[in-house]
Structures are given as C-alpha cells and as structure tokens.
Length: 180
Image (cartoon, rainbow, N blue to C red):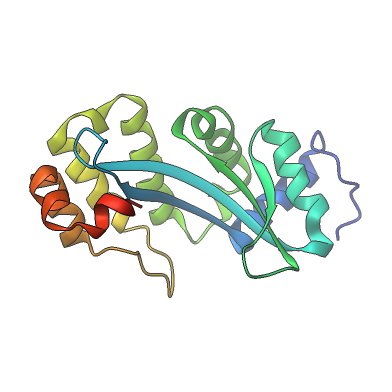
C-alpha cells in the first residue's frame, strides 16, 4: 500500500481509493421484477468495490468515508469481500461527489459513469414512476453490463413486463413464486 496511512481525511489517500474504484469498483443498476411493483420492474443503482480479505481495511475505508453501505463476504468466494452501497439517495449524497473528484479525472470508465449518473439523477427526480421514462432508464441500465457479465433476463423480457405486467406474471407461473 502507499506510504499514506488509512486516513479518509488525507487527500492522497482519497486519490488512492479513487484508484481502487477504477480497478476493483463497479457502478451498476440492478433491474428486478415483482408482480407488486407498479409496472412489474424496479431499478436500483449500486456502487461496489471488491477486494481480497487482505484489503478489508480499504473496503472499510469506503464504509467510513460514505458513512453507509456494507462490507460482506462474496458468496462462493471465502477470501473475497465486497463493499456495497445501494440506492440513489446515498449515491447522490456520498458516492457521486467522491467520484467526481477522485475518480473521473483519471477513469477510462467515463461513458459507463455518465450513464450511471444519468440513471441515478433521473431516479432521484422520480422519473422511474412514469412508465415511458422507466423503459428508457431500463434500457440505459442494460448498457451498464460490464465485461463478461450478463443479466439474468434479456432486455426484451423486461420490456415485455413493462408493457403488460399482468399478462406476463399470469402466463409465467414460475414468476409467481420467484420474482427476482
């Protein structure tokens, strides 16, 4: 690690954390379905940083810095931990200001970040409450699928739910049990 102690008030350490976001971080928007959602679909922005157990102090630095989120063991990987912060309110309050200063000037993920930020801010303005805007936000969210990652459902299936959730959930009985 760098010569700077783990100190979230130290500018050099904050740039160090920004570097971790570049290499080990991800910004995404989860898209979940459930018959009880107004249009059958919900979106939620997520900020993650992953690290080997030897780097738990780094993950805890994010938790301390943002005064929110959780550090948990990654499922199926006993030596890997993930710092996670969910929800547009916390992300606007904490993550975006941090990323704007300590991440954006150096990132090669600027296109992803711009899409993520757009979805986060539109959500904060309640845009996901309108069906047509929610469709656009879902389409933007699907652009955030990282390298080698795939989503559980194809975009076409999500759009089908948004068009008519009642028909979708009635014709897919398995979804009545497992709606995620």
